[in-house]
Length: 517
Image (tube, rainbow, N blue to C red):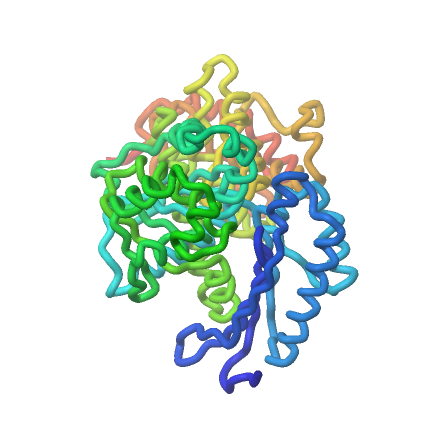
């Protein structure tokens, strides 16, 4: 093997449920080109999904595979690489021991992607593929990724993602979970249908102005299904008639895996996954009005390799995450019947204060996004319980999937959104006390800004206009004009000022002038 001339060479290693794969790639003529693709079977998924752990035999095999891949990277002159793992490592009870041993034995760091991180990387590549001039036109689309251990769905409407949700079930996990039942009943497909209907059938997509008439699916078994249906691959996309997929499942639903493998010339393990994958796909299809399925040939490592090779792609991805997360938050707030004008006003005020204090708070733009999301979601709890709305807000947010964010980030948003002028972060609060010191400091900074911004629209009537923020020595001066009674806003602001000063050492001051005509 010879390294091709050109720019830097990168590698992505993907540790999946059934195999460890490596892709060596390089930019050539502004296109990401593969120099090598390596595949090493390793059935970690069966171990984890049935026993909860990765065995030491598998660990030794994985370590040996990584040593071989490391040698290949040396031969290609790889200058940068990333190793990612998904569901199988997320769910392994001994994940910390395994990653530690791989670091010691191989001097390699494994990045275990959370559900939303994994799915969002894949969604971003799907949207990039479908933005190309030759791509089929889509309106409202349900975008889905079906892995061996998890499912992700996202709703794309009006050129943006407005909803996402992840489910801890996949083709392999589903097979292993219900394997015992399959041997006991000749109508296993009925059991499978009922089980999936209780999971996927409960996904409540937000309403859209037009029907969801496109279904975009990618996943480990989609290529197997496409080949079984003899669907052509054009421009890295399969186009499959939905009725053909339904007919294929009708044909095989009463067959044992060995008969499916003989009929379609595939291994029995592939036949088992074909069966459960088709069942999952058809249940997702029921959520839409789609007549065909668009399946871009996309893998997780496409997005990872692109970010390693193209410097601006990481910034583009971060902006995609930001705009999509905000759109999803707006959709959630609408579902919980929140006051949209108030939420957007608080978000705007919070951003003004955050931006003016950059040299003081030292927080990144990713932290600014957490503040914005907290502002957009802070009234959700009223939908559940007006008396204990702060607690309800906290519980709702922390158990919500927000596009592109980790569970930890969502948990921090839940903390920020739960405070009003009457409450501040306190060690008497068990959830706050359990945070790391770093997280406590971050939450306190964001809460100080959020409470001040929320106070500026305490009446939810947007009384303050032309709001400006300036930093004047040790005072944060907020000026505004209004032709209304703003006594409530001034009172709330004064209540929130002491905690802000405690956190930042800066005294906030509100100056409201009469509106001049």
